[in-house]
Image (cartoon, rainbow, N blue to C red; front, side, top):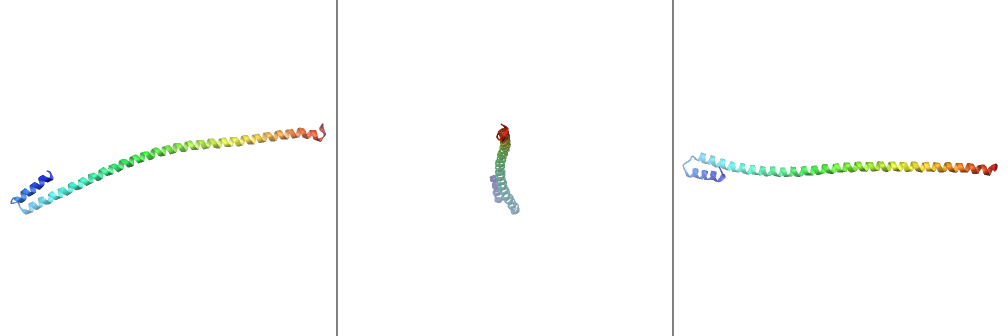
Length: 122
């Protein structure tokens, strides 16, 4: 029954010779029903709002998860670039040391040749 139909029934019964306790009880029940209906509507709205918040939060979590994956990929790429740069720097340093050693040996060899000339060998 709708709320209007229940109100009409209460009015109809109060117009007749119905025990006042029965009429009062029926009126109280109708009021309780209306309050419960309002409470159910409030709870349905809260559920809908909670669902919206949950949906939004879930979407944000998925976005954050994707961003984290991207950052991890970027971190891995950066780490590889850094390793490569360190390896190249170490190779350049080693090459420079080898070059310096080679020049030093050539200078010693040349010094030995010219040293023999200066000290009376020629």
